Every structure is written in C-alpha cells, then in structure tokens.
Image (cartoon, rainbow, N blue to C red; front, side, top):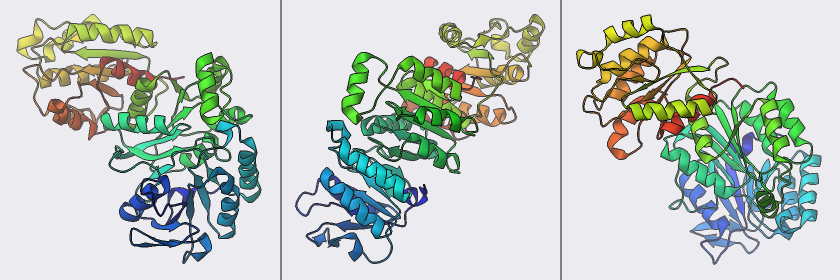
Length: 453
C-alpha cells in the first residue's frame, strides 16, 4: 500500500462534521487543519451549509479537485459505504476515527473494511483510533489544540494501538526534549497495522527510531514482523501491555486485540532484533538515546564519571542489573588520569570505576576524565553524572563538553536533573545530539539500549 498521501496529503476531507456541535471530533480536526497545517482541508456533511464561514460539502464528489485523504467521524454502520465513496472519488486512503466496531463485538463491519482494503489496495487507518499527526501536513488527532502538547520536530516515529497512550508518550518525550517525526494511532487496525507502517517508516528520511505501543499482533503478523526485522535498518522499540490475565482482559475490551502469551511475544521480539521496553520510562529513554546515537554491537564495558559517590554507587547497581560491565581502569591509567585533573581535586579524586571527581570538580575535570577514558580500548561508553549544583560547574558546561566530545565515536550519556534552572546546561548537550537523562536510572537505560542484542 502507498502511505505517502496519508502522511503527506495536499488535500484532506473531514467527513461527519456537525453543524451544531463545535466539540464534535470531526469539527476539532477540520478546524485546526484548516487554520494550522499545509494540507487544504474540506468539510463534509450530507446537509451541506457552512461551518466557520467555510462551505460544507454534501459529499466527496462535490469537493473541487482531487482529495488525497479522508478522515471519517461517522457512525460505524455508515463507514463501509463512506469508504466505498472515498475509493470511487479517487481518495488515496482514509482514517476512521469512529468507534463501535470489534471492541464492542461488531466484527462484521471490521471484516468488511479489511476485505475492501485488501481487494482495492486502499489503506485504512483505524477504526476506533485517535488519528495521525504528520507535521507540517496534517494533525488528524481529534484533540483540541489547546489541550494537546505539541511535540518538537524530531526523529522518533510513534505507532500506538491506544490513542491515550500515544498522547502520554508524546508528552513524556516532549518533557525530555525528544522530537517526533510522525505519530499514528492505529486503534483496532482492521486493515493497516504496525507491520505495514514499519515498511513505510523504514524509508522515511525524517525518522531514525520507531517506537510502538502494542497490545497484540494480528494472527500471522508476528511472523511477518520477524521477517521484516531481519533486514530492518532502524531501531524499533516496543512497549507491550496485556502481560497478565487482567491486562489481557483489558486489551480485549479496548481494541479487541488478542494479547497472546507474553513469554512467546517477548522471545519473538528478541529474536527479531527489536528492543522491548519494560515500562514507559524505559521506552522514552530508549527513544532518546537511539535518536541521538547509533546502536552499537560492541557496547558492554562502561565507565561512570560522577561528582558524587552516592550517584556513582546507584549507577553501578543499575548497570549490573542491566548487564553492563564496569570497565576496570588499570593502575597506570589511573595515575596518568590523575595528572590531568585540576590541582584542587588531584589528591582527593577516586579513580576507580565509578570515577568520583568529588564535589570540588570543575568543567575541565569532567572533560579531562571523559576524554581520557573514551580513548581507552577497554571503555565502550561513558555515563556522565553531571551535578549542575556543584560550585565549580559553569552554565556553559553542556555546550563545552558536547563540542569537545564530537571527535569521539563512542557514546556519552549524561544525567542532569530536568528542571528549568538547569535548562541551558541540558540544551548545550542536546543541541549537539548528546542525550541527557533526567534520572540516574534513565541514563543507565539509555546506555543499555545501545547494547548488542
């Protein structure tokens, strides 16, 4: 199927707008696309008339010119006929916002949509979905713009069966200053599913990482997923629900998915070479790290550099739990590193791993330690626990260190508390595509996401 006009439409028709209810999902979608996005938007209601001063067309055939994409927010029983009208009018694909399908037992309508899509090579997103966010062309989420946290432009594409989870993930990524290229809510995925979209996103030049919230594969699609991932050239991160009996029941009532056996799912994902996140925190950390760093096949031995012994100890425990080894620093290297540190900490710094530069360290000490260790063959990555409240740390530390680290190919993952006061330090790293975690745990998660396996 060709998804280009779904993600990059020049024209979009919103079918099902209300002439009396301004909060109807179709009205919200039409209004913000008419005012804020590149695709030219038209609205459709069988009664015709006007809406917000714009003409309401009675059907798709009345719309002048070619319509690339249709967004449907009509009653479930009207969807199949409306989809047929879309195809007859030359529309390239449709997003079905409407609910009332398999999630309440109406499998017949969903099966009709799936059959039509396959027979006519007509992509249908949904039904029972939030929509698609594809800037600068389209925002087909039925959420008012004043309620939605708009993500920064970026390299992470999101696919989700749940619209609510999708919005939560967007918010969490925005909190970490991680940008989004596209976001798709697939709902019941009667026709188009995550495997179809992976094929499209693999070729999307704006996307470096693909994150998926999944409740369950459709029958046979787990095998297709494994086959596709064999030659896939971008990291894929999955967040799964339906791991327990209660979660499985919730999944079934939500999008009528069959969650399947979680152990089988987890093994399938691992075999495919994708990354499974255990929770939203891991998911966000993985997305950030992999959107900045190339996934390595050699990361195993890490070195922790800190200004606080307690932070270093916490990071050490977390590294052990995630299968990361703390590199052994030879005594000869410890002495050479000590000679590069400032006079104020040379005699008090602990140069075992974790390397504790103490609370008296300055910017140059963190640089000297990281630069030295990144040049050692026994170190694959550095976790930098940078405490911005230390008196010798400057507000320019992020930019200074990030620019200096450009010459290294090994990843540097930094922890800085994410509060407004430290924003300039964080921005210094992230503007140079060095990931910053808001917790020690997050920094270790990011590093672990770059490991082989």
